[in-house]
Length: 164
Image 1 (spheres, rainbow, N blue to C red):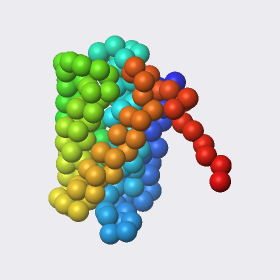
Image 2: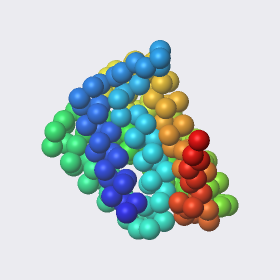
Image 3: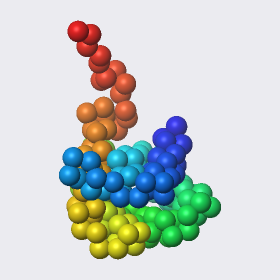
Image 4: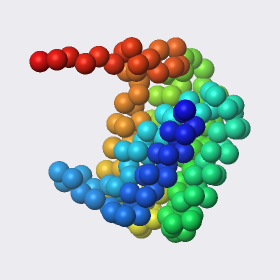
């Protein structure tokens, strides 16, 4: 399930960027798929837990290949960002010690700004408001999963609905 979520979020994020490019909402500029890409950093850590240190790379290449089918330029920017940021995320998550949550947080805090810088520069050029905006959106969205974690697994029991 985590691998399909990972793959789908990358493809959908790239489709959103392909369709809408850079968007500005409440003064914050970012590529349209930024929130979904932020989720992929946490999802990648789950995929690594499931498929091993090297198995997660297969899913990255598959997502890039699918993106290549509809936008080569975007696919190359995305793949380049994967090599820089996902490699960094993978290396930190793999080498760091501590709980799953600690390793996820540390790897996301370092790799999401690298991804934003690489992707936006290659896809759109030096659009600094979009680089900063994407970094902020991706950091927030990549950390949304933390409150749901328990022992390295998502616990749906931690989600509560209050009726008013």
